[in-house]
Length: 222
Image (cartoon, rainbow, N blue to C red; front, side, top):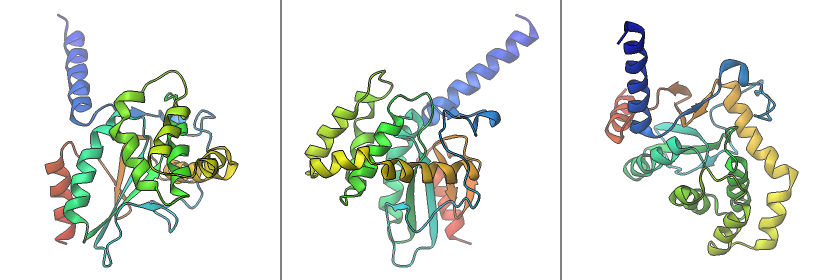
């Protein structure tokens, strides 16, 4: 085996190991960040979190804010979901966890899923739909056909007003809300999902719950 082939094999093994650590991680190339497939321009005043951002926890005296830009169809986000849930439970009185939409091109139902969650959010059910989509990701992720009807059955199960849900899914303002998160992400240099920010600083995604906990503990100790 030539040296070049050995290097290529080593690189492939490294990529596979990273994928196993936190699922697949789909990246834009730098020239793709303004691509029409993203369907959003970077925000000029991009911010990791806004007053309108969806908060999964809201401590009375928050000591730290963790923001995730996510795609509900992304396997990496699905792999990170249990870790985020465990961290939320552990730091619910100290850390604010925020979820922001970042549907990726190449995922047939990424935007459809984000619209379903935002439509649910308009009826006060953001977290239940957020959790439902990650819990069922293996059932609908990577499908070639639209899963809008399936997501509608989830809305029924959550007790949503379906007339209002249907209207919200179709409303341009709902898509604009999803794209507002996406624009912030692009403006902040988000190129793939999941991407985390801790107190406004983008971090390399930790490869395990223990690593993420250690990072949070180190920040809280400052």
